Amino acid sequence: MATEPNRTEPNRTEIIHDLENNFKQNNILKFKQLFPEVFCEDQIDFEKLKLVLGAENLAGAGERYQLDWAGKTAAYLNLQSPTSRTLTPCKEESADFDGTQNVFIEAENLEALKILQKSYAGSVKMIYIDPPYNTGNDSFVYPDKFSESREEYARRVGDTDDAGYLKRDGVFQGAWRKNGKDSGHYHSNWLSMMLPRLHLAKTLLREDGVIFISIDDNEQAQLKLLCDEVFGAENFVSQISWHRKRGKDNSAPNLSRVHEYLFVYAKNIENLRFNKLEIEAETLKAYKNPDNDERGDYRVLGLWARGNQGGSRYEYTTLNGRFYSEREWLVGLENMKKLDEEKRLIENGDKLYRKLFLSEVAGSVPETIWLDTSNTANAADELKKIFDKKAYFDTPKPIPYLLKMAKLATNSDDLILDFFSGSGTTAHAVMQLNAEDGGSRRFICVQLPEETDEKSEARKAGFDTIAEIAKERIRRAGRQISDGLQSGQNVDTGFKVFKLAESGFKQWRQPGQADTEALQGELSLNIDSVLSETPSENLLCELMLRLGLKLTCKVSLSDGVYFVEDEDTGGLYAFLLERVNQDLIDAVLAKHPVKAVVLDRLFDGDDALKGNTVLQMKDAGVMFECV
Image (cartoon, rainbow, N blue to C red; front, side, top):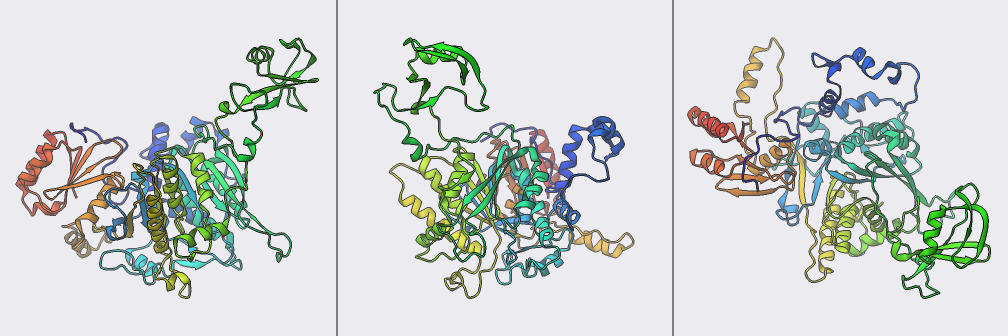
């Protein structure tokens, strides 16, 4: 905990209630940092930009290579529009809410990604998503609205309950629509759904981060071009083919499709470093020790160049006196002598080999065809083991599939995000991997409370939404993993649940220029900026997100004051959300916070106390804000 006040908040801006997660404005600010000279009165001078970058480096308005579709402009507008909504805690559905570092968000994922931008930008090491494949039978939220009132949104997604959560009954009615192949905008609708989400996901990735995206033949071509646009073609890592089916489908009309694809893109491929995986059992069989070499098992590798490999041309006589005529060797002469001196050479007729010891092999580089990561049938079996012989979910991904990605892309304390969480396989895999290698990886999973079919086994079992299936799966998986731990081993199997809700603060609505009466009414409504009966914990969560604090920051309550420790910097933040007096102000100052936030209504017209508080905070070097 910080003992001295920090004078500034690195990479943070003051609360701007309508712009704190504005994608467009944030990008303009970044651009201005790179090219301040091309801005004139806060607008970009493209003629100056041509001079700075060179006109030959800027694409013209005519024909050029690009991916385009009906609705692309609206999709970018949707991306750029900020959200006024927030996340609120739901402790009763969480597991170890106060102790866990894992997060499960029940929300429409575009809204959730926008809300997370300020707190989690540049924080996520690995993203995995399994979006709708657009088979013609998928339903997803489209077209997303980029401009609508609160009332319009409520009509579209369903009303909220007394706690401010979106109602479970009829949730997102009108937003979920089937995207049939008979639609004239079949591919366009899917691309419009994916574009803003991928852009927001990219912002959340660390500079050495990576995203894995599952897809099948319906949209793989479009997804490749879209990802090239969002992440940059230079950051393409691979297109993996995954063997997803247990057996062959002999009823297929032409070919039995047994694979899907996994696209892999880096945030910045120059910074990407994959881990090596465990050496496969089949490969280990090649390592033997027939001559009882004290250095252990080894395999032999030919030293002569083959085909177009190229190499160094020379003749060589071994220390044993065997002569090899001039030829192309894979190693240079000095390295050949070194191998010989270290007794690593094996002579076999006219062929010369070297020993590669198992102890020298750091691990295995995986191939781009994955045959060893289970299949969808096994994934259903995994769910049945958790849910008393019921799968409850049609298209789960198997745990070994996610484990392989996480082993490749993450280290022990990394953050993993899945914003098409489905049945919760990603969360399950993260907890299991931590149990296997002692890591402390964390997850954020986002899942829309999509209703289960009324006739489904899930609905009969009491699961009204897919989000409920996922949460229960994580709870049960967590208990199973905890039960299997060795003595002294500790794995975080909890998760904090947050749900999408309307802001706890009143939203300013700009009246018409000539509507004086409406302006007066709006001003009177906003004398107190907080909506009545909004719980303090909900306000705290919203303010934390707006200040760029993570949902898993350590929170303590002392005499009515919430103290939040920034997990990134260690700085302390104080929130007075229930009452304020001089004694509380003194208690806050004694802890030397970075910033103190007070609800303006708590001063209750006491201008003297408010004025003194402002001066005291300034003298102590504490940033202060009334909201």
